[in-house]
Image (cartoon, rainbow, N blue to C red; front, top):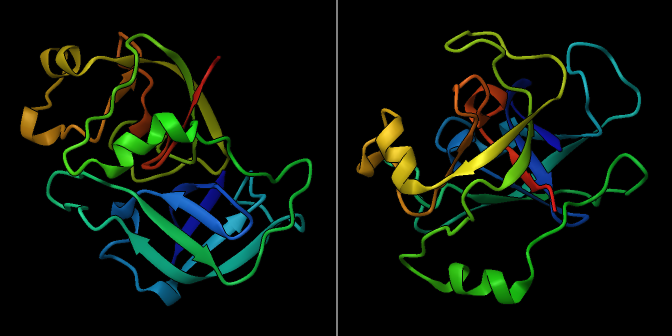
Length: 194
């Protein structure tokens, strides 16, 4: 996990996908921050305490998905190219990406729909809010175990309307609603358990 900051304030989480690229949610930085205001903090666990094991990177380039829509969050993804390369170690390393053959059809599709198996166990990570609607974020990186929810069930059991859940997003949480990715972070890593 990478902590993305804007003007030295936590904005979102991100995931390392190579030694020079981070993937994150486009809404975390667009249009709130200019490129020079954004930093990627690598190796962070608790941003409320000083740590000499972190590395802070400037952003060389922001690559927002060309179909990103601020109104409904469709295609809410962007790449951040770092100004320097990350040195990997036992704490800092890239995430595993899906097999290209499984991922390519979605990438190429203009109207792609994320198809995630229902009730898939997963782990979400981030520095989100500990209490719903609280202005305070957790200082420490947190994790929660959730299950994926079908689009149909998500629309039936939540306040979401179809126009607020574009086909490029999916739902995950727990039946009682106490854990979800919004409580953890705006951008999360969804790690399938298998």
